[in-house]
Length: 494
Image 1 (tube, rainbow, N blue to C red):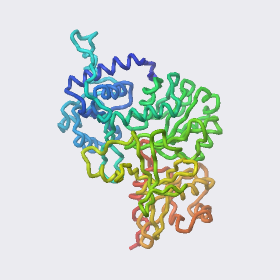
Image 2: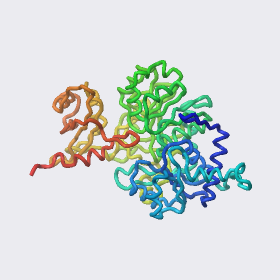
Image 3: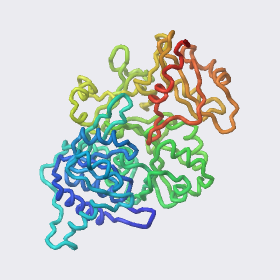
Image 4: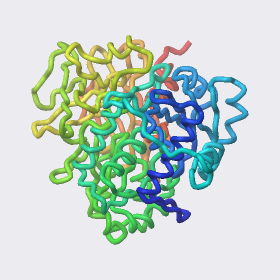
């Protein structure tokens, strides 16, 4: 592992220094199954902390650095960590609340009271300090992490991921994506999300490869320059659209690269095609979620289909449930709710057995809440979320079907289709559209362009032109925000 400022860690260094951090946590009373909540900026030391928790058997609880103090208080109250690790600037706001037994610090540069404590646990510095010894009794089903969901439909829930979940998924991805000790991952993702933490770092660790750890704030120009030092890049669609804005992105700058992976949000087919034209590389899209890690992936060898997330990964099963009958459907291209089964599926929601039971079928499959279909080649296509389904005049409207047609209109950059209350139709199909720079389109023109390509009930009742779509930190469009902002759009005028 290396950082832009020239620091480097070998695997031997990683073992030694994560061991020191583990001993430091033990000195604070942390034992297996204790939660360690972490709300820090991305750094090499944050990676060491994550590995230390795995070795110690502590439960790693990453917290998004963008969350407010009130949201952080909720997480800490819910998971009751033994230790919380925060940026030094957060201490005055958190310590007086008395939510945690121990509060230690780690700054953006990796320095702070936790690493100070770790160095004091070094036998070479402190005579008599004991080396780290892994605790006994850690099992495959032991809890390894709690990741809080985004909470778009209420309070966030803590998804409990086991050591088996993490290990099996890392081994599967390393094999499926052909990782080896010769690979160098250009790491541009945050460390509080399953993409950057588990899909990226765990796959590197499982394969003995290396990585260049870049800041979370994405600098496309710097990333393009560093592609010459790497072999693999994992990003979200926003990363790829920004890379395409750099003139230096071409076949020469990506000549050393062997794999580009995209996830966390749908990648526009146009982005996929333009990236292929510019670089000669076909982006590999995959499908995962907090509760299951990675489920499907376009193949390393074989067709990488734009708009599809590929077949299920080895050892993982995906099925489609008919929303009307509740029965499993095997008819290709039938749209229904997706369910998952495999060693990647989480153990349930933290201290919420009722919600856990609700999210699993009677025969043990996890209900993802995603709408999708499986084509005749076995490739999975995500249509949207169940909660995003629009029921207008009694008809089901799948947002993705409408978005595909809107995105195909010349001058449209991207779109998001959602439903809001409508006095006549129950829900009105509504579209938020972002235009390309310089495009001279209006609402009527866009509607006219798609009128012949969509059934009448699927046509948006309104098209809202926006400068950008609301997104979360991983680039997912926040349709809940669009719905809330426009919930009175069709209300009768008084």
